[in-house]
Amino acid sequence: MSSYVPDPAGLRELGRSLELQAAVLAAAERGRTAAAAMDPRGRYSVRPAPVTAGYRDETRAGAVLEDTGSDALGRERKNQTLQRVVPIIEEG
Image (cartoon, rainbow, N blue to C red; front, side):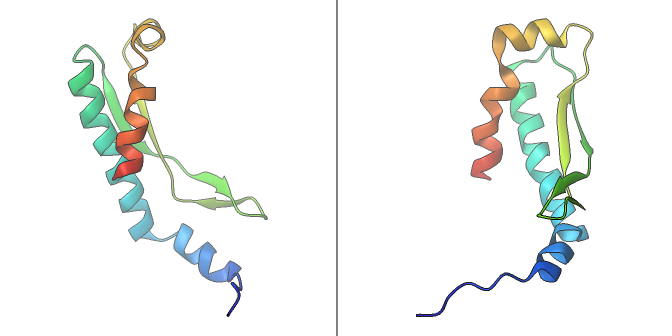
């Protein structure tokens, strides 16, 4: 039986790749579409946002899905729309 040997350089390269950034943005966009269907009053948007990851706290591909409407906080507290779309994002 072989054992896993981490490849930090490979993971770093993957985490910073344009392909991973595109995949992360696509997942967030699926969430945006679902959120907009659940809450048509929301102003949902997606934007790239680097995240910190890895044991050296390195920058990796990331995205933010947010409701930028002026009443977003109150609606989110009531409806929990963003929380409800997490499984949709994770399922792909």
